[in-house]
Length: 94
Image (cartoon, helix red, strand yellow):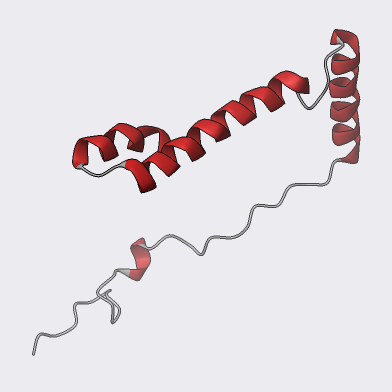
C-alpha cells in the first residue's frame, strides 16, 4: 500500500495550493452614490424624452423574438421528421 505523500490530504490534493474559501462579495452601502446615480439616470431619460422601459419598440422586438423561438420550437417538435428538418429549426429554438 503506497504511503501518503507529505502535504497531501486524504483526497490527494495539496491543501497549501487550494484557494481560500470563497466569501460573498459585500459592498459598502453608499446611499449618496445610489441616489446621485438614480437622479442622473432619471434626468437623462427626462431630457431625451424616452421611456425608461424602452416603449412600444421594445415590446415589439420582444414579441418578435419570442414568436420566432416558439414557432421554431413547435416546428422542431411537431414538423421535423428527419435530420435536416430538425437541424434547420434547431438554431433558432436553441
